[in-house]
Length: 418
Ligand SMILES: Cc1ncc(COP(=O)(O)O)c(C=O)c1O
Image (cartoon, rainbow, N blue to C red; front, side, top):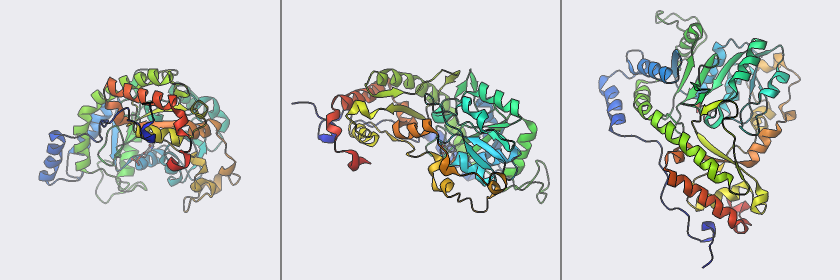
């Protein structure tokens, strides 16, 4: 019998599941019970949050860590600590989760979108300087998918113009740039511990920095404006309550024990996928290692899809066929951030700092071709899949090769899967 795509009723390449996420065992249970039975559920009288802050900062090679409720709050507080004033501009990439840009708005600033590099999907240093104005205060490179941005060049530009650099490391736990962990390469780094992340407690975030003053400011901002060591009703800054719970910190502490080994596994599986998928016509892995990114956390594995090699079938049809073959994957962001209504309609509500800064600003005129291409071509595979074995990676390659070989079977799937 002739070979058929699984989506057309054929036998799938694979029927075994890939590793599930999150992963937990009795050590996580004990950590949570330890907090439960202690009766100390918040950092005000507990020790778990402080212990995790120190452990994670040490793991990421940073001097200070301030744990917070989530990675959106950590970005916002980092931007505020960097000294943003109403209407100040912050350079961000448009191919990222909304929080990278919305945190700037929530800090009463103005996100300015600068395109990504087509080969890495990270902020393109060649384009940054043209976007700098007298109102620019900071650059927020995202280490997208876990691949470090071109930090030497970004830091050099920032130094030349007196700008702060805030690394968005939501995807980059354990990633390295020229052998150094990300997070404190710039002035501040922001991490997320939301459910999908490579280190998770369901929700959570942390700010890292090597700067004592910035650390003190972040601590104050996350603690209702109290100075460290100050009295309970002593408030110096316009902060809020962004404190992490002891339960989150205890769980993160037990999860952190696994992070290094998991990162090593993902970092080995990524190049194996690169090698296999690059041989499939119409699939092109992203580049890695071209700017000194040494270790890739692979929060996402991304391969670029060219419909021309698949009879014109859209990306969604390819992903649906891969899913049927037993490979979990999907298209990523379908539009650049600047096409979200938040920006096209400037629905910034009370956060209207932009009015003072750039009355001329109209996000509908923004065009970032590399980002727009990424929105059309990127196929994402989640980090937990890369915790599988080498044979599991080979199944992914086999499924992609099969879908390509039998791409005639993709026609007509566009509307069903879109
Ligand atoms: C690049 C990026 N930045 C920031 C965040 C925000 O993190 P959180 O969901 O913890 O608020 C995310 C989360 O998905 C993200 O992917």
